Amino acid sequence: MGFILGSGSPRRLELLAQLGVTPDDIRPPDIDETPLKGELPRDYCARVTREKVQAVTAAPDDLVLCADTTVALGRRIMGKPRDAGEAAEFLLALSGRRHRVITSVALRQNDKLWQRDVVSQVKMKRLSDEELNGYLATGDWDGKAGGYAIQGSAGALIPWISGSFTAIVGLPLAETATLLQTAGYPLYKDKAP
Image 1 (cartoon, rainbow, N blue to C red):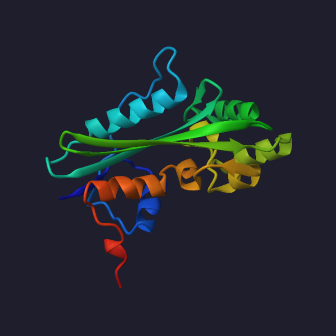
Image 2 (cartoon, helix red, strand yellow):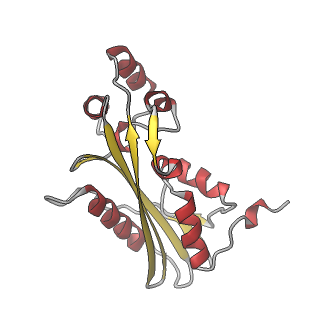
């Protein structure tokens, strides 16, 4: 049984390593992540994750793991910003407000699919122009849902969370561990001395 990570995210690779799991291969799928008209954030995140895990080519006994993280302000889906201008727009919308970070994780083996969604609440402090411009200058917003990564310099902008820190980063470890164990994949095997 091989283990394939369907993601090019270095953060997901680092989080898997905390479980003692190293993928045998990394195969990021190329799918259209455009939200459907009227699609709610949690439904969107779960659908995109399912499409990702189905798009990865694998042998019948291989395990494929994919995840997607979405930032939601009410019904608004905030994906990865196209540029610094859109990142600024997202961050200004989130400034001083609570929002949800939804991460869906899916594990597939042949035609079996296991999936979990984790919803966390996050509060971003009210951003001054100096904080906003300073953060944008770091470039840390690039490729991050909602325009920020809590594990990076944006951590200083987040005074409060309720939920799973690792899900906000991009891979909920407790749920991922449960999915892998359910599929019979051993954890911590790569951490042995």
